[in-house]
Image 1 (spheres, rainbow, N blue to C red):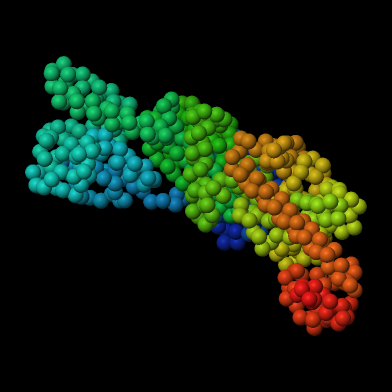
Image 2: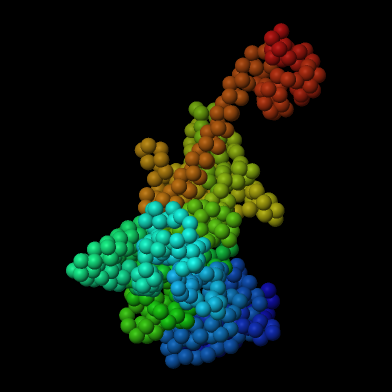
Length: 610
């Protein structure tokens, strides 16, 4: 990055007014890289060209490409927000959130009469059919078409009516009472058209209005003693009610609602918007918006950008977290809708369940784009929110200490990458010069040795030469203090937490510099931290047992004439395992430094029973 050029841009920014407005970052070709708004143009724009090295990777990259900038002064911060949305929509700059849904559109298709059928269509064509849509979620369209056909007993077979009436036997759907049996001629064209009209009304308006209509017609038919017709209306009502009971996504108290959730990955962020109208989920939209420096900032930008171009604004919007500029966004939404639009972060009940549903869908989309599982994405997302980190930890290192008496004290380092164990990066430590059992001293030694290796190997960017995004230590406040002391000594800034267990040795909480963070309300974070803690403990415990086994055999080996502590250690250092030593020849044993042939013969006899 050209420091002189950055200094010149900083000097220009210092001359800007303190008024609200919009700024446009431009590249060498005068193309627009980024459009932003500011309460104070001078303060906001200057911040880009001050302490550049401390910027996030995304911002640093953008600033490195800035050749110049322009600005527009506005009368208020609200005017700046509206102008920003308009300019972004017009220019779609590279470094602004690009609201590109990664799915195509789907339609509900009603074929031309007579005996029209309801099906799903991927595109709208000029074929005389009626199309309802577009919808961005093919899943919602398929679900809606299936519900409508079942509730109103419309045919879904490949037969053509009226041509095929009376030809062949009825299909299974007729016997399951999922079809009215048009092929048998049991329903008149007029009755069929009425059922179709009601099915379309069900699709367009949801179940509330059509249930009221069916109830009125059922009662009228009963009064006219048309009991067969009344029974058909009754059956349709029951089918709709059964669908409502099965559909977990129905929200009974709010009839106009959007639910928005974000899940952040290392290089991508997924946003899902679930749309509910007339108490039914009518659509799902998914956006992949790239890497984000701040989820609250991205959430605020998404809401303002998305609804700036929408005409159907809901009465309520559920959010999964804080959003920047919420007061300005609230003003923009209210003005655009001509009424109050409620922005809310539900913490419990149906609202919290719907937010969780949206979050899980976002995790699924992120997993699909990154090749990970939705469970892994969800666990990392929960851990990120719980710990207050700016982005999900790609690399997590966890440490544990294990001892068997005072003689065998070892440490373990396990590594998780994107929520998966990276066993090839695991490291084991034998505690040196220990003065008795002291977990704190052992942990300090392990971490000091690990970060000393970082200083000498950091150019490699691999193994010890790579710093973790999150550091976890098995233990409470005392262990946390040791880790913070070591990091401070090496001048490293890495988020660090202690993993606390309960009385039954199960993971209970994380303890950080600001206090304890309970895991019981965060199922995904609990599962991930538990897995990491258990793996660190297993790896340390296995190493301690192995050392104990070797130590016991070293003592036994010292019973061979001519083998003392020094020669026993030399043999194990050379052969590594008891099995390799037992399979060695006399010549191979004698070749070990410090050994003689007579002693080697006695060791061979020891293993071979002579």
